Length: 55
Image 1 (tube, one colour):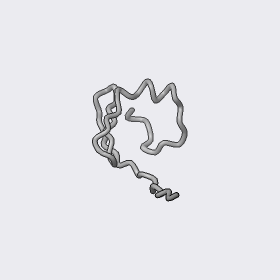
Image 2 (image 1 turned 90 degrees about the horizontal axis):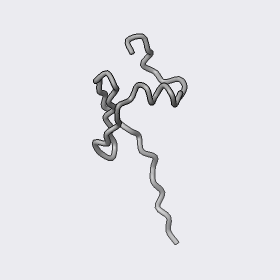
Image 3 (image 1 turned 180 degrees about the vertical axis):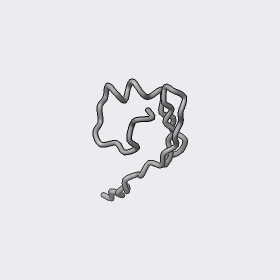
Image 4 (image 1 turned 45 degrees about the horizontal axis):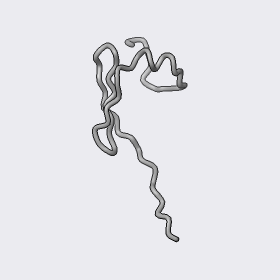
């Protein structure tokens, strides 16, 4: 993992499954990603604006 870039440029499902141990939802806006080597990162998740539907 030391040789990987910080930016995700494409999604490779197989690689993701090899690297990740688990993803924990901490709150509505925040997750914790745990990698198999024990490293953890916390990430803010931008929520799309919800539309109010009125009849």
